[in-house]
Length: 108
Image (cartoon, rainbow, N blue to C red; front, side):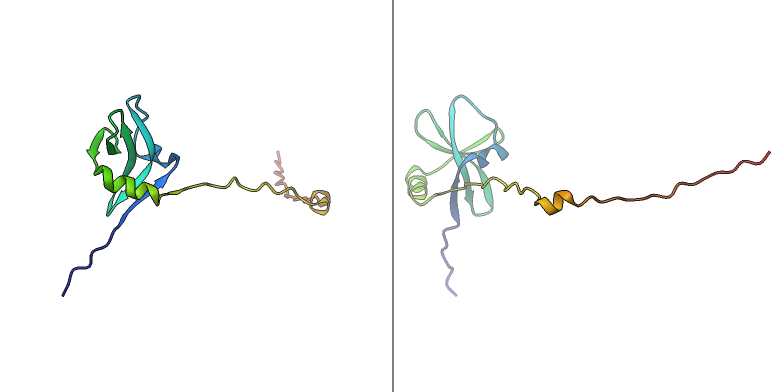
């Protein structure tokens, strides 16, 4: 049986890196990288080397492989939620809820 070679590396550009790392002045964060079951923030240091950052852990990545993945990377754009205004009929409809009160009678 032959082993199947798959490329499970994926880069998503955007602000998702904030889940995995803290902002650092010496790094430029690009997005999120997923390598198999590993996932973390994708960053580039001042020397141009690519890193996978998880908290304070930094792992150096293959530059040519990351550049190839960046060419096919997709950007995540999260649409703003649609604010729907109630119609005139919905605004005119008033819901009234009547709650019965308990009355306590005290006999002397």
